[in-house]
Every structure is written in structure tokens, then in C-alpha cells.
Image 1: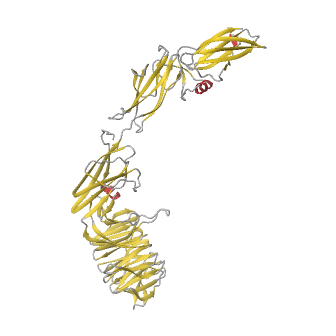
Image 2: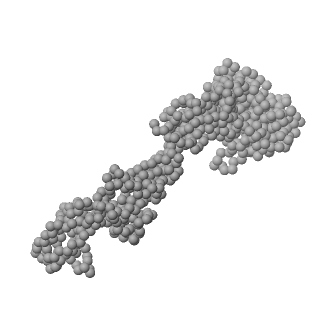
Image 3: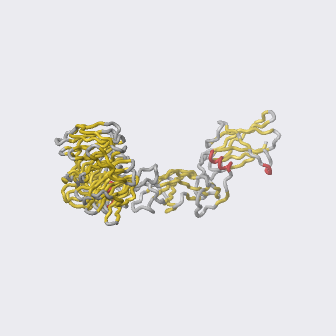
Length: 635
């Protein structure tokens, strides 16, 4: 295991609003801190559809599941049975004395249920029934699509009690003998007194109101804001209203239900399965369920009963505090080069931390198991997550920070090339000068010979060799280079240091013929206090001596003369033998033929034919180091 000594340049911090990004299990999340929450009872019942209403009658709790049309009952002993099944109905529930009232939409039917049996059934002069309640001596129902409230008369017929300017009457609450109604399309709050005189009390600017409650004289309203774009879901909002003053308590994910309990206002949202406790300028997450949609809340003796949707489940958030709770962070990406530092926290009480890591962002079986930590984070994976376990009524967690940095990866030298003689590239240093542009045919010839020729290559003077390299740093650090040259690859001479360019010109005119070695050392010291180096070495040939012609033979064959011979070089391979029978004013070189069909060795035999009438021929031999020699022969 490599130990990298470095300072941790980054901090991953959980505090303030970022606390809401975590996952709560038995804890309450606020902008200020995380602390133990209340016990939550799961009734282990599940269905498709969504819980639309929850009502207690005597000792039994009834709940309706819309879309599947079920009314179920939780008996005093905890058992659950089905009271009614009407597939496809939207069902709202209410209470009339000791009877359960169930409104079926879009049938416009009102059922009265005693225990598990239907005691009576009435038709309502409206398609949809959204809420039912007792106000004084009256039993009222809120309906749609005409936004009317009907009063049940003589337990047999309905009389219009109040008409709103909205499409539907959705919620109700009684305060100081006054009835307050919430509506949808548009979402308004009406106030109706005991004399049945009503008016618009408050316009929160909602499209739909789905929660009403009072905290003292403060009206609390939850609902959905008007859609700005039909392709997007509507946002949720919660507002408080007191003495003509409006307070925005929340605006965010859609809120589907709201309820007052124990002097506090709660609302459930439909994306993350969270239930919030809201105040004028702040809120706290008191429950975070696995089901994403909270569709119903009801206050029963101070306990908050919770219904969810898709799947439909029932929970009870009790007044009793938990003895233990957990808070888990979101997954954090440190990166492939991460080195984790320390976990520090600000809080009080009994708090223990655990961490786990993985190679991909999605947590699955490939992730490591949770393990406890003190302060130091011992992980090598690029993704990590921490969890805190809180115990004790006065314990709270206020802030968590994780320090981390990047492992310093060494530079990578991808290529070193010593370009052919007289070929340069890049910025010219002292002793080099640009002599011209390389003709395309010459560039092609050199490439075919196996030389690497950069795009920006050009011609330089005699005796100069260009050392060219390509390098990069995985961390995008700036690199500097040192250049060393050796004759034996054991003792090295530093030619240049601190280069920022990717080339160096070496004047080899005074170097004896032979094999030499060049070493490039790359360092990221410009950007790192803990610099790393990489090096790469290649050999190259210095050859100032042209090839030698030997054993020239001339043989007359018919009207031609067959010329043959041997060309030899001590260091470099032969690349071509050329001949010309023209005069010096009009030289036109032709290629001789290699005896083995290819010029690629240090010693090659060659031949060519000329007209016997020719008096002489010039022969030019060229080696791979671009050394050439011309000799003249006579016939």
C-alpha cells in the first residue's frame, strides 16, 4: 500500500440545508441539526393504489385506498380486515356520530357504515365527494365539480349549504365556531360562520389546497402551486397566514396532504416519502419512509397516522420518543484518485459513525460493509457514504465534514523520438535555426523509412538532432522536463533542466560516430508539494560517415552494360542506391535494384543497367542517417 503524504485540499460538509440530503431513520432533520425522532409503527399491510383518508370510529381506525376502491379497518387488537371493495372508486371518509361516512367518486354515492356493514346508502347531487364533516348540528359534504357544500337533511336528502367560486371543496377545519373550507381550481380558503354567511378569507395562490390547520390564530395551508409547464409536475407549497400577513414556510416538491397535531403543522410530500413539521420560517423532517408518496395524514389523539401511495401502506407516528435513530449521508464521489482524510463532526451526546465504500455510485452488493470509525477514514474506493447512530434524548448532530484530496499520480511519458538528422519540431533552443519547410515528398520518404515526423516538423541545419517527446499528467498538473544524454547508458550528462516545452535540440556535429542514449525526466513539481517523477530512455545513432562503394563490376550484355557492386556502412543501414548517366548539368537520378530486392541492411549488393553507348555513370549511396556519397565510374 502506497502512503501519500499530502494536505487534504477539499472538504465535504453536511450542515444547514445540506442536512436534508441525508436519509433519516428514526431521526428528525432540521436546518440546524439532526436529533432523535418519534417511534413509527408499521402495520405491515400493503396494497396497490393510494391511501386517501384515515378516520377513527370508536376504537377502530378506518382507511380508504383509492384507485382500487377499498375501505379497510384496523381493529383495536391490531388485526386488519376489508370492509368494502369498489374497484376504481376514489373514496373519501368522514364521521357522522358513530357511523363511518364514505363518499364514492365519480358515482356521487354516500355510504354510512356501522362496523363492517353498510347501514345506509344515499345519492348526492354531485359527481365527486371530497370531504365530509360535522359542523355544529349539521353533517356537511364538500363536492365537485361545481364547488358546492351540501347539508344532509333528515338523514335522507341533501340541500345546498354553500357555494364557492372553485371547482371542488377539498378540506375543512373548525376554528372558534367558524368553518374554514379549502378548495381547488382555484385553491382558496373560505370562512363560514354559524349563520351560514361566508366569504373568501385567504388566497394563497395555490391551484389546490390539500391541508388546513390552525396554530393559535395562525392559519396553516398546504397545497399545490399552479403548473407553469404542463410537462412538469406542480410544485408544493405551505403558507402561514396571520392578521393579513402571509409567511412562506415551504416551496418545493409536491405536498399532497397537511394536518395540525399537537400544536404543530405537518405535511407529506410525493417524491421522497418525507413528512415535515413546518414553522413560519423553518421546517424539520420528522419521518422518511421507503414509499415515495405521502398521500394522507390524520391526527388521532396526538398520534399522526400516515397513508402512502403506490404502494398503499399505513403507519403511525407516535408521541413517544425513540431511544435510537440513524442518519445516513448521500453517496459522495471522491474520484478515482481520491485519498480520504478524516471525519470530523459537531454535536453532542452519544453518536457513533460508520462508513462504507464502493467503486460505483449506486450502492449494491459490491460495496463494502458498514464499519465503525473513529476519526481517520480508511477507504480506497472512489465512492463513500457515512452513517451516524444517535442515542439519548438530548443527543444531536449539527455538522459533519469529510476531508479528502487527490492522490498525486505520476506523469506519463508516452513517446520519445530522436528525429532524423536535419529535421526539427517545436520551439527552437540555442544552436538551432529553421532552414525551411520539409517538402511533402521528403516527409513521406522519411516516414516510409520508419522515422516519426511530427506535423509541425521543419528543416534545421547540419549536425543538429531534435529530441521530441509527448507527455501528460493524469491530474492535469503542469510538467517540467530534464534532458540527459549518455554514451554508455551508465554515466549521464544533464543537457537541460526545467524545460516546459516538449523538445530539445542537440548539436551532435562534434559527437563521434556511435550509439547514444537520451533520457527524459518529467516532474509535476510546479503544481505539487509532493512532486512525482517519471522517466523514459531511448537510444539513437550518431553517424557522420557516408557509406562506401566496393567491388564495382561492369559486364557488357548486348546493347547494355550491367553494373553491380556492394555498398557498406559501419553503423547505419543502406536505404538507397541511385545512378545517373546524364551530365552534371542535368542530373536525373534513377533507383538501382537491391540484389535481395530491399535496401535495409548495413551491407547490400546492387545492380543496374545502362546503355553501352554511355561513357560514364554517377552512383549515389545513402544511409539511414542521411549520409550520402557520390562516385563516378567510366565505361
